[in-house]
Image (cartoon, rainbow, N blue to C red):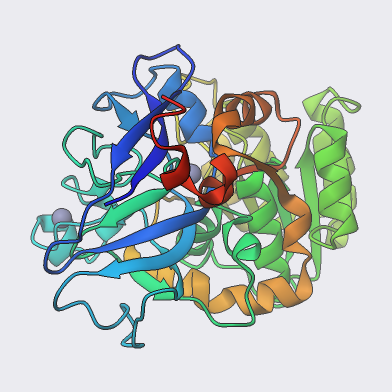
Length: 383
Ligand SMILES: [Zn+2]
Ligand SMILES: [Zn+2]
């Protein structure tokens, strides 16, 4: 079997290393894929920095699109029942819930399953040598993976453009906080989660979407693709009170927003977001993925405002299916390709740095096209 290359996190706070691995024949119930595009996520930056416990060595990459390379016995169709053949373009959810715990069975909230296996995060390279993350030219997908064959109309770049932010927003926004037709929606944050929130709010019929974020290049991108109507740059309007006054003035009757989505990861944004809501409004805290600590918060805002405050964690396989099913409409309305900056697999460290610095909206690796696109011919040449 031919070998393939992966960019591997061997030790925290060290550059990823290119490692050569023998390809595997998929066992029964499994399949292998050639990874064409793999998103580089803010979470990957945190993982390389050692801020979350993960098995090492680890092939990062929990957002990917590729083609079926080989099907193990018994694998004949995708999660929706569409027939699968070698060469089909596919995408898959990063996480596999156990299906038998309290959250899986009684709550039906698989995103909260404590036993989830997640490609690129908790499947170590030693435990899963057939390819355990998207920063590799091949991956071995295991039974229970939510896998969707892509419609011909969708380009793989469009599928990977929002990365895990897409299904994360589908899970968060279309729970109880959901935007309604005619709503004024404020999105705090202009990274992939903020951008996806703005796009889905528009798609759901929001009358006005106001984005509050930085840097300017990301706000310009969000505005130019039509994801928001007004953008407020927090590096220009540095005082929170000024921002609250400016945003409130833009809402009907100066009452505040019907829905505010926090997508910043910056704890003080939570109180600011509550102050941007109208009374009886909804506030969705979606951006506090990493624990960045305490923030002062006046709880009187919640009672007096009669605010409905929601949290949302990750996404399930079902959310991923919903996300892929809405992508054609999203791609029709917004130029998703403009979000993407590609890097070859051997430039994975530069891609991580670009995400760390916020100099690109979405860094995406091109594993199968890297190393000349012919890893077998270069076997032994790049370790
Ligand atoms: Zn479970
Ligand atoms: Zn991600």
